[in-house]
Image (tube, rainbow, N blue to C red; front, side, top):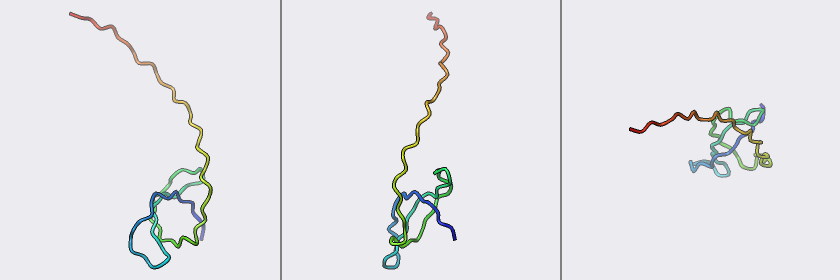
Length: 74
C-alpha cells in the first residue's frame, strides 16, 4: 500500500456509512501535477491534510508580433 496525494475538488453528497464520505479530486504526481481523476471513499479522520503548496512561478509568455499589412482603400 502506498499513500497518494490528492487535490480535492469537492465532497460528494452520495449516501455512505456513518463517519465516511466520498470525495472527488485529482491524484497528484511527483511534480504536483494532476495525473488521474479519482472518486475516493474515505474516513475523514484517516486523512492527512497538507499545507497548500506555494503558487508556481509563472513563466512569461513570448509573443510573435502580428504582421501588419497596408490597407488599400478604393
